[in-house]
Image (cartoon, helix red, strand yellow):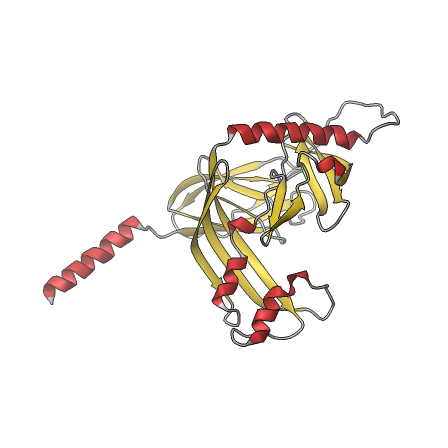
Length: 292
């Protein structure tokens, strides 16, 4: 019995050393002038692969090991900011007040003719193909969250749950309510030309959602707009906004000019002539890289 206790104690000690406890670092990202939250801003640990984004209320959370870090916050149209933190226990007030960045563009003259957005998109397509040729492999960490909205309550048993999972394509109505939530944390690996592997490290769902439904979340469901064909729920018939033939399928127009740390970018609107893909994205003027 004494030997067993010693082995058990040794195992617990080794486990503690190999898997140190993560500490929470959280805060909020806001506009310095107005105090308004900046939704979906980027938070990253300088010199580290850790990072996250702020939610719709500007709040964020990072899980880090104990130590000293520099955390940088950035947002389109604002100057980035960096703070140093000494993480010895959970911190809840690492806040960022970002300053709006001024756009400095040379005066241009516009003549009747081709939509100027098309020329920018052509350069973005060329840059996409260069990027594709030089990237052999990559790894990313993903957190995804799915919200199920139905008119009726669902349960983990019976046909109703199965029906609820397919309601993502149904028409939205004022009668829909949140009846389930599924979350997933995963590590994903890609190797050219088409090898993809994903490891689920954590997942959970509300008790009324069957476990199989969690396959609807994960890194593979995050759309990659650098791809010519975008996959949504196994359907790859959607043409990407900078696909080689996208100009024949989308209508583009420049919405406004912004900047990140004095680097000018353009925000453009892309509407697929046949729905459902439509929305806005940002392109760097100097590199023509797709930013968001």
